[in-house]
Length: 242
Image (cartoon, rainbow, N blue to C red; front, side):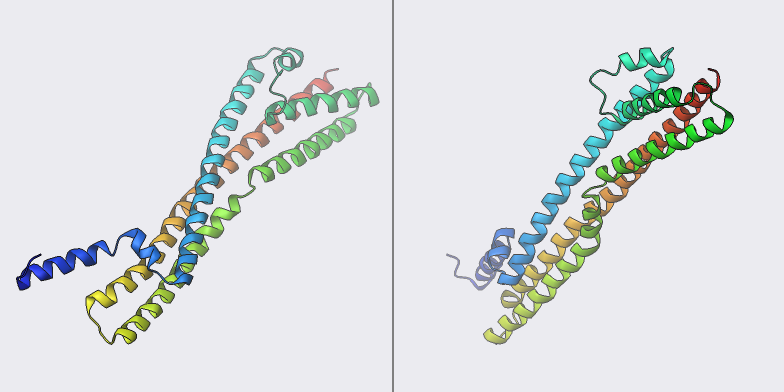
């Protein structure tokens, strides 16, 4: 135990610093601020699970579709390409190809000798059917991505609300203690700023990831649409040459 005045000051500062740890800030905070902190932590955890899941899925899906598309252009005929699709039927590229094969089979049965008008009907049916599939598939991929945008816009304000509430609680502590010393003011202010920091920690990665994932989804959608256009053109040319 230090008896000197300077030693007592040092001991008091160390004690105050230890009381401002993250755990002590949480357990010493007001109940409302604690609820906000827990909500922001859970939100951040859920956001990161969405981020990792979507980015991992899109990277694998894009690579797989690019590989199938490359194999399609290197294959000599539709039949040989279809034989190599075993185990990959659920991939969008494979699904679009199989949809085209089914449509051209029905068209050949109904129009043995197609006219130019019939070929135009075939093109419109292919684009409509494949376009609906692509839209529904992209919509499924986009599930939960909007949550990241919500977190990015709302989390800072939720943290700010916790800050305002914590400062109000701090003022009440000052009034109750009838003192404005740092030992009385610092814990409440630190609790309040802790909520703001957590709001930013949840919001910043969510905003960045939302832009990243949205860009990846748009690029993937364009990739599928481009393949659809090329596939429809090839099918139409084959039907014209019959």
